[in-house]
Image 1 (cartoon, rainbow, N blue to C red):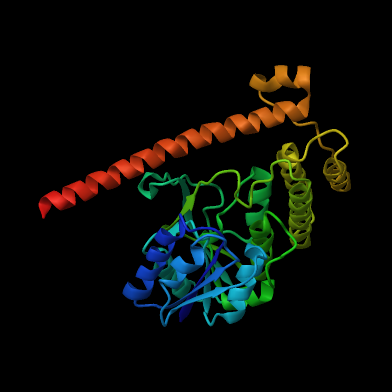
Image 2 (image 1 turned 180 degrees about the vertical axis):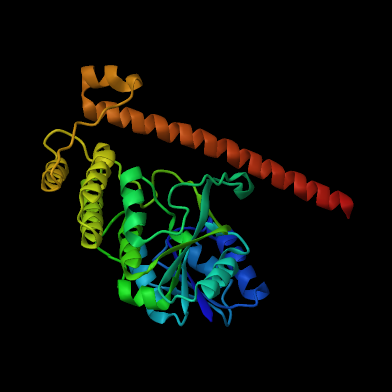
Length: 345
C-alpha cells in the first residue's frame, strides 16, 4: 500500500521545515511505502526554495500561481498515486507513528470505506507542550452521529487527523475552491458521507500550530469570508439532513447556526438575515448573540460591533502574548541544548 502525504504551502518559509523534516523521516524509516507531494501556491518568500531542498525520488515539489489551498490540494491529488491520502498543512506536525498506527487499524478493520481519525492538540512553538484533550468526536462513529456531535456540540477535527482511502477520496470529489474559509470542514463532510464511518486511533497524534489572525480560517470583518463560511454551514446542514432529517438533526443544526452567529452578527448584515431564514426553515429561530459581562458596557454605549471587535482584539492580544512566551522558551531551550551538546564534545 502506498501512502501519499499532500502539503499545500503558501509563504511558510518560517514554519515548513519541521513539517517536511518529520514527513521526510517517515519516508526514510517507515516500512510502509510513501510519497510526498508539496505544492507551492505562488509563495513570495523562500518556501519554494526550501521545499525543493527536500526533493528526491519520493518527494515531489511543484509550483503554481496563487490559487488557494483548496486548488493546491486538488492539483496534488491529481498527480498522486497513493492508496491512502494524508492531508497536511505546511505548519503542522505528525507524530512519528501517526500514519503507521492508522494503517494497522485499517488492516484490522478490513473495510475500504473506513475513515481513520486521530488525536490532535494545539501548539505554538513547542509540540511537547501540547495537551491532548478528548472530545466526543474521539470515537468510532457513524457519519450521521459524527456530524450530529460536531454541529450540536461545536466541535471539529483538524485536517491532518484524517487518513483517507483513495476510494473515499474519489467518491467525495475535489476540494471546493470557492470557499475562502472552512473549506476543510465542508470537504470532510463529503468525505464522511462517502465513508462507512470513522475509526478513531488514539495512539496516532497531530500537532496543530496556533498562528495569528492571518490564518485562512480567520473570518474577522471580511464580508466575503463571512458569506463563504455561511455557505459552508449551509452545505453542512444539507449534508447532515440527507443522512437523517429528524427532530434531533434539526436541533443540532439550529445549535450550529446559533453558535456561529457572533461571527456574522451586525444589524442589517445580509449573512445574519440569511442565517435567520435557514433557522426558520429548520423550524426555529436565532436569538441575538450575547457577549460576556466584560463587554456589555461597551455594547450598551458603542454598539454590538465595537464590543465584538474589542473582544476579538483582546483574545488576539492574549493569544499573541502566550505565543511570544512560548517562542521565547523554545529558543531558550534550543540554546541550552546546543550549549549542552557543545560542552559534551
